Amino acid sequence: MNTYILRRRIFTVLKWILAVIIFIIAVFPIYWMINVVFSPPGISVALNPRLYPSSLTSGIAKIKDIFVERGFLNAYKTSLIYALGSMALGVFVSSLAAYEFALFDFPGKKFLFGFAMAALMLPKTVSLIPLYLLVANKLGWLNTFQGLILPNVADVFGLFMMIQFMQKLPKDLIDAAKVDGASHFHIYFRIVIPLSYNAIFTLGIILFNRAWGQLTWPMIICKEQNMFTVSRIVNWFNQPDTWVTADQIMAANLMSAVPPLLIFFFFSKYVMQGVAFTGLKE
Image 1 (cartoon, helix red, strand yellow):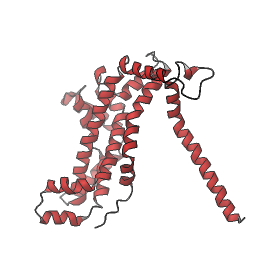
Image 2 (cartoon, rainbow, N blue to C red):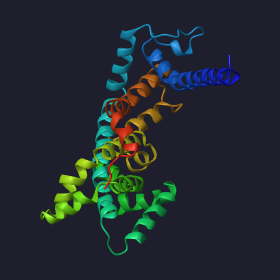
Image 3 (spheres, rainbow, N blue to C red):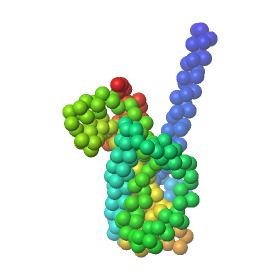
Image 4 (cartoon, one colour):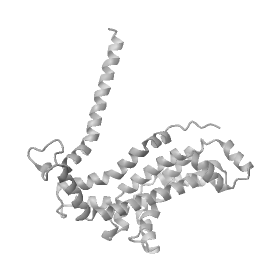
């Protein structure tokens, strides 16, 4: 056998072995959560733990317990409103701003875009204190959904992403719409948005997952228990003074991972298409 071909085959086998190892490392924590939840209580701390789920009824009981007895259901509702509101408003604001930056010229355009990109380089912790003082003291939005959602609406990364996408849109369609008498917002809603569905879905998934898993801002702005989010409850479960068992913690972690996984599963094709080159040419 040719030495070159032998080396190629060995290299291919090693790549597959490495890929399988990485896959196992990535998937095993999720599998272990499922195993702990759908097994008899105490399996996670047993001397000889089972490596496979063995009790569907125990898993259902644990999930029911955290939803009914531990206040997880209300946190689920709060997180869904928070994540969906941040996603919808964030996509709208980012796409509308990107529409202006990508397709039109106006005074101060380069300065404003550079200022926005500079803000992207700053760590989030720098703005937490002034943001809290504005939202809580000046606006009085402590323990409210508007205080939770609105500070996340202006997303610089979303602006940058949508600008890069919209710059690839065919300018001929925009010019033809102007000649036909279409208004500024008519072009945005009827032409630009339908052509940007892939980028919009991609940004929407990113914003939803970011809001769903965010801990710092909900912990700062929401002090009352009826406004706790899922991430706040899971973090509270992991504190040493809560007396929550490892089975219940695993059940909470598993259920907190369900919405992001479902959204990514159903809309993953839009993510791949949005990240890839659009193929649109002028």
